[in-house]
Amino acid sequence: MIDKKFIGAVLPKAVLEIEKGRLRFFAKATGETNYIYTDEVAAKTAGYASLPVPPTFIFAAELDADTLFPMMQEMNVNLERILHGEQKFSYFAPICAGDTITVESKISDIYDKKNGTLEFIVKDSIVTNQRGKRVAEMRSVIVVRN
Image 1 (tube, rainbow, N blue to C red):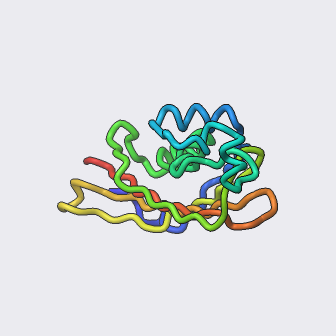
Image 2 (tube, one colour; image 1 turned 30 degrees about the vertical axis):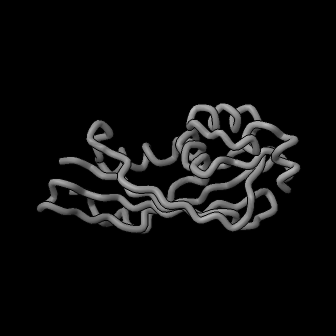
């Protein structure tokens, strides 16, 4: 069983520069067809400062910072036994190419089901831009199969 002492644990901050090429690649990889995600003229015509991030991009970008997996190893979680259970995003302002975002995350809950056969790690994150403005919040649920 995952020790509940990790509830409230704060992960290292992840600072991520939002780059146009990475946004275009992500949009293509996820099958996004709206031109605002790949064509800067279309994005600016739609009112964005530059290419906006596709809806789930900040989750993938946070993974690149590799802040979660070291914490899970500290929690003695077998990384071969995890599944991505749930993801929720709330956006408060656009995030665009050229922005630098900071993701601050913490473990907000740990619980189990089926007598410990499944354990759940809930991670909540706050995303701010280079001006310190809160632009998004995320919630991730990681499932550990025992």
